[in-house]
Image (cartoon, rainbow, N blue to C red; front, side, top):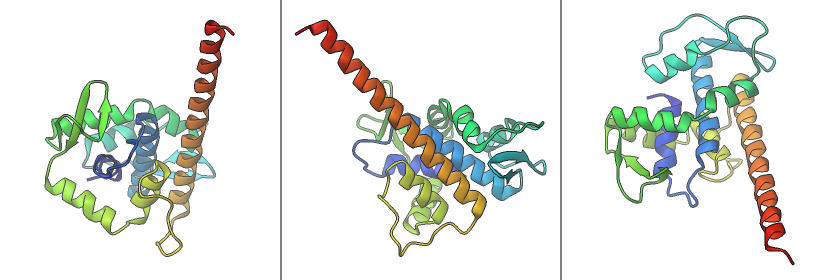
Length: 201
């Protein structure tokens, strides 16, 4: 399983209230894909630019699709641009893929609800692997989960990321999630002001 798939499963298993938002999770999944591509040598970072590396064929169709979508000619895109472009609707894409693979099942009261469909993880070896990685607080998975509000803030006792590129990606995911939250808050304020205008004094 990839980091993104593990993160998706943990997001549903976490018991988080409120549940992780689809937009936040989509950005984190795009970051997880980029970290796995970095680990496989499919891309490198030059400053904040995502530069294509050695061609690779990951044993995962979603990660393979992510690699195929890397901008391969200069000027390369920034990590931030990648997160927003790749992240658009990515949580729903992962839900569909994991359902097709038998890793998710539809059930009322599932952890994530996109529209009317609710899903939860099936008890499979892949789920056990994700849970084991989570319980060991594997640094990349723990850092990405923390960004979307799962597990709280990391403590000083927990191992940090020892890879500068992965650290840069996690930081970019954090900034993107904060930007998305700011947009949501602004819309809430604007909608409330609009509603008050129509209600009148």
